[in-house]
Structures are given as structure tokens and as C-alpha cells.
Amino acid sequence: MATIVPPNERECERCGRRDRWDDDLGTWRIVESDGEKAYGSPFCLHEWSINGAYNPLAE
Image 1 (cartoon, one colour):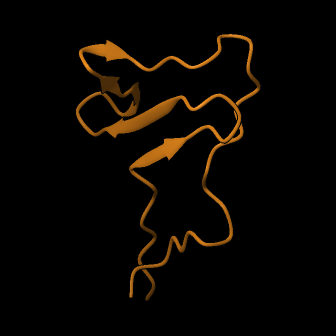
Image 2 (cartoon, helix red, strand yellow):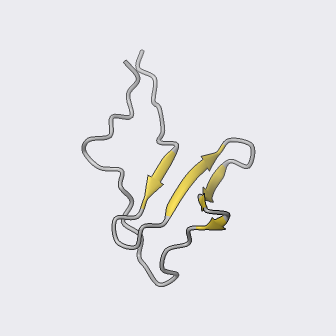
């Protein structure tokens, strides 16, 4: 039986916003860089860096 492994980080290819999955909250959280949240552009329709190179199946 295959095990599905979801991504735990993602980055918007348009504005650079970076998120990390928070298991405790069960949601994505914006990554902090130099003590500030890396929001990217609030008007961006985020295109996350999860593409064909990502394999959700555990080996």
C-alpha cells in the first residue's frame, strides 16, 4: 500500500511568498525571514512551486 506524503513547504513562483505547513494548527503559515513574515504580494494569485518534480508517494 502506498503512503501519500504531502508537501511541508511551498513558495510562490510569482511573488516569492514562502509558507510552511504547521501540524499543530493544521494549516499553512507564512515563513519568517529576518524576523519578518515574507508575505509576498497581497494581490498575487499564488502559483506554488509544487510541480511535476514533487512526488507525493513515499518510497
